[in-house]
Length: 452
Image 1: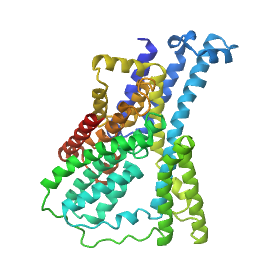
Image 2 (image 1 turned 90 degrees about the horizontal axis):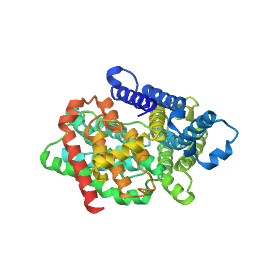
Image 3 (image 1 turned 30 degrees about the vertical axis):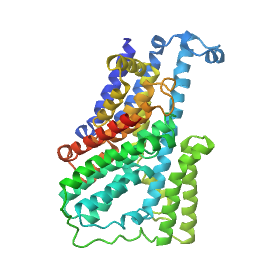
Image 4 (image 1 turned 120 degrees about the horizontal axis):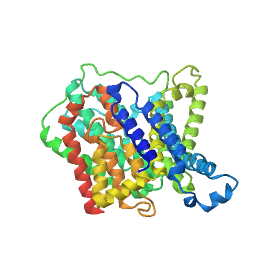
């Protein structure tokens, strides 16, 4: 293996270890992700002459740059064609996420999610658990698993006084949110990546993964229905009343909630009708919500410094997460550009052979390793000419990467959010929630393989 490829693998591995050890090193995972991306591409372009043969370049590219010498030609191919081509694909994912995150922040700023959460009241542990889990399952399909987890944990804080009871509910919210996000093109970052990349389509993924994802939730829920029967929760002595956000009227809150949710649901329809990239539909939905909020803001004479204004909403966007996706996806694209992922795919096919077993293992690995780079790597390993759009392999990958991360608290964005909000320890989750999540993951996987 050429020295350049060894260096790239080494840089990517060290960067990945730094991401996994984020809490130990006290360094945000975004920094090593961006650093490894830049270094991988730097090594690639510096040693590109040893990795790329001129005769392998497309004829149109050679004709277009016929005036360049061999070294300049290779550098132009890597820096101006390969890198920018990957950046275009990655950019469509990032703009989609930015639009979705802004819409969610808008709705939250106006207190819109209270329309859903304030209607849930129960004292039976099993009844409340079913209500919370089912709501999280469907909410994450319309929003995303991370947002759903944050909203639902905020809800159970108002409904459950005991922290131990709350921890258990938070763990099941993670399982439900991840299961719900797997069958929707906007429910999980990895499913969104496959959707934008052309590996899956909206109707096909909903049709194929709804039942497996539902079974992934039902298996642990049915077990808990039996094991927790007769138990009751302990609500807070004084149920806090949630005031409308700042000075927002109920009418304005309902308008923003309706426009925001319909805007998110409109994105798949926009892509189907226009065939434009999904981020264009998301930007259209954001612009409509923006205009509506400005009209409300000025007609109601809200203060320009209020948290409801677009400038304040944009400041609350989780920019480090967006930059993390940029870094990790660029780093993975370097592995794809150099042919390392294609070689890995060949090795896996030769050693394991069964693509379903490989994808199932990827799902389990996503509990340890972030599922975003795993899916990005898999997308680079297997070509659409071999596994076309809506092939069972891509659908099973969406299920596995979306739900497998529930097996550990660090395996998904939803799990990490719950870990931070309720201070759930790694080993507590491993003991109480991981076996339930694994049961559901295996149940849904077996069902998918049996049916499809």
